[in-house]
Image (cartoon, rainbow, N blue to C red; front, side, top):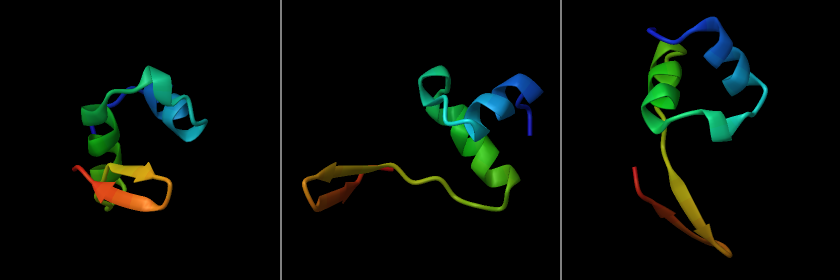
Length: 49
């Protein structure tokens, strides 16, 4: 997964300011998931990644 135990702990505890998009993407793939980034404009959802 190439993500340190400390980083995994930050992700699991919702410390998103300490994470980079690439790290979160690798974490999602390691869990068998796919990461998507969605902007919510008051109900108007736009997927950007």
